[in-house]
Length: 104
Length: 419
Ligand SMILES: Cc1cc2nc3c(=O)[nH]c(=O)nc-3n(C[C@H](O)[C@H](O)[C@H](O)COP(=O)(O)OP(=O)(O)OC[C@H]3O[C@@H](n4cnc5c(N)ncnc54)[C@H](O)[C@@H]3O)c2cc1C
Ligand code: FES
Image (cartoon, rainbow over the protein chains, first blue to last red):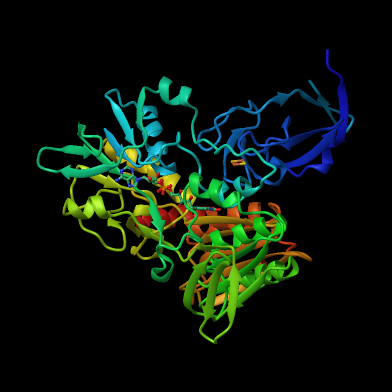
């Protein structure tokens, strides 16, 4: 079973926003939804490996900053051209004001 | 359903037709020999000699096979018989269509004095990029004729490969078309810092080649020598097929807001067409941008399937040069007022406003994708015909998202009035 890793404080991410988190040579994106829930995915777009954390979060969608490819950050589902490969998602839980990510 | 042109627009349309539930045959016929690929990397990563020389494919062959889309490469459509609804290809075959989409794109505008010179090339296709790539070696001399996006992206890549680069622009500044002066100036400065020589306001009076190189003479009498010159002075829409079929042409194949040409069974989309842009008073424009090609491909598929969705997207464009990313949303040319927002030492946004304060366009430049999110939010404001307060736009402390949220109720009302 993969480890739970402390990634950031819950308050480090604005509501309906995303931050980049680098860990053990990998890069992730951690999201806070409009309903104050937390999610994590791979940090790079599956189209051209661009950091998603510079993109825009709207409801449950993260939009890539480069060519506006869209993913549902809760499920990792690619939402159409130009992205066709889904994003890997990771389990997240919040404990004592800290965001923990289960890195797979 | 038949689509001519297997670029970003044509491929997107083919896939969208299937996604929308079309059950009959879909044929995608394109003149190029490669499996369909994206064009933007050609002046960027494709020119990097250390990188993979394969094109970036738009879809995998498997995806096309699963969607049962028949792709014919290396075939040129020669004639349309509109009465019998037949398309003739140069391999002798004839395709019957119910709806025909012309996604024939554009080709580089030729420079008459460069025609026939072996050392003068253009950059539009993957084969062009491969040929050019072989010249990008340290110490080689490259002349870029035209200070537009493609020429400047190429100049940046060439410079990074150690090539001596001179950009020759006839107009007083680079990126005269569609890019605000402040952004053009910042890009100019970045090229100078990289060691590119930029000669603005210089017309070329002659080009002569021999075994030592290409001799270029400028209007002021100056001469320069190059091993190779890339002509990047804009693009012309590929309209010959449509024109021969008697379709209306107006700076591109003229279409209505659902992308239908003057023949109800023939559509045109992407770089080859001109269309009425609802957001800007319905003025007829032709865009040469990747996202427009994608969006219009999808929209054309909808129209071919009997939908009546009008085009309403905000024009959007990006360019990458060195570490800098440029993005532009909307059309700035009718703006009378510019508001600047600084995002850091080397990143800024410009908001282009109409006389009544309506946001017409936003442009931004900064390292990597620093301006992307704000340009995207500005795009939403532009789409909503918003009149954001000037001081809020100028203040980096005001989140653009808050302006979008503030605008929403009024915008919904406005959209209701318009449609
Ligand atoms: C080097 C380069 C860099 C670019 N960079 C950017 C960028 O950074 N950002 C951006 O927004 N845009 C960029 N663009 C523009 C963008 O690539 C185009 O807007 C987009 O490719 C247009 O797509 P299209 O499908 O309409 O046309 P095209 O991509 O031109 O495709 C048309 C296809 O139709 C084929 N064809 C034409 N006539 C026929 C015929 N009679 N029969 C069969 N086939 C035919 C052509 O061979 C071609 O393959 C760039 C373009 C180039 C060339
Ligand atoms: S890199 Fe994300 S959509 Fe292209």
